[in-house]
Length: 449
Image (cartoon, rainbow, N blue to C red; front, side, top):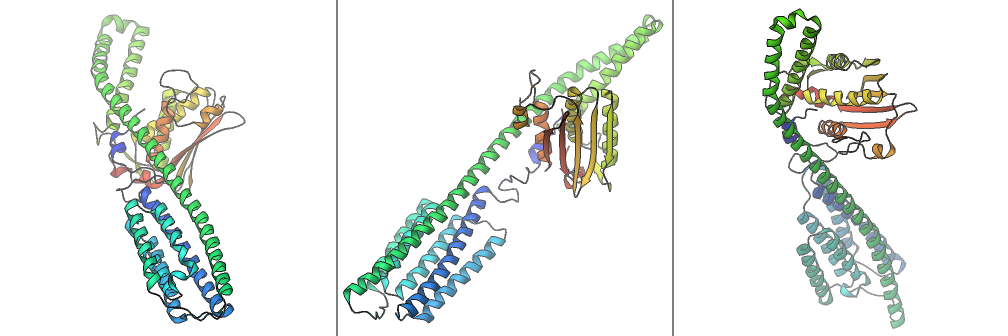
């Protein structure tokens, strides 16, 4: 099977797993964006909690508060949240520094509210610990330590500088009870928020780790393909000379009188020459696909014509007992024929023929902006273990060296084009479906084969 080495080096990976530096968002930035969204949610809760606390304190406990100044802090948090949402809607990267600044602003808002409502004696001063906990989970270590120093400085500042509030109760027991109730409310609030947001942060981190593991797996697979492509290219170079020599010898044999007079021998020599030409075409295709005969053999066609020619070529060369082909793709789209894609489809068809010599079914259709190419057979189907690991190298029930590489290459080439491969067992036989975005096919003329 031919694999385009130029494609492997220059094309972008499947969009489900974009890489940084290629116009896509990196995994670290995705995680930071999710964490900033968590901070936005926390800030909305802080706004609602502050409004509720201010109203209860002012009208239920009859403790007068500087409502105008406190309302200004609440409006500041609302404006900060709106600005953060606008930053998330853009394509700019979200960095550790931005998360750090967001937490600093939250700490400043909390400090201002505490300053306006009794300073360090306010039981809600413990909310500093919530912000430090979030910083430890979201930020780099140096940022977290700066946050600790800032919170400590704010605490010390509030011990000496604050606006006292006029308490309506003069009894010590009433004042202590009020303070204890406030501490309890603060404890429950902080504990609940820590559990909720630490759980969500850990989920974000697990998703990032899974994403990075998937990228590493794909990188290893693509490195495997590149090495196989280089090996195929080298083998094609080595095979070129002996094939040419054999072709010249066979041409000389056909000119010999003894061969000409022997009709059966002459036909055998002609068949050998035809097979040698086929081998030479395969070698040429490998070299073209690896970028060493770039620009040769490219043909402008349409998807319908490409599929019709491909299936006809496969029918003539493989000669299946029965082939049902339905080309329902429409409306048609212009493309440049792709050697790698041709070999991918050939590989799927060869696997179907090997499993079901008496019948192979092929269907092509258009679903929105995708080409859906389906191959069915009436063979024994896929084993459960093979189906679960389909697309992994050397996953095959054929029991021969190199088994499973064909579908491994199919999966990776289709994925490089932004498509996907699915396989399933039917009541009789198996079905493999290739789904390819039309943009990847119609843009093929601008890419190196």
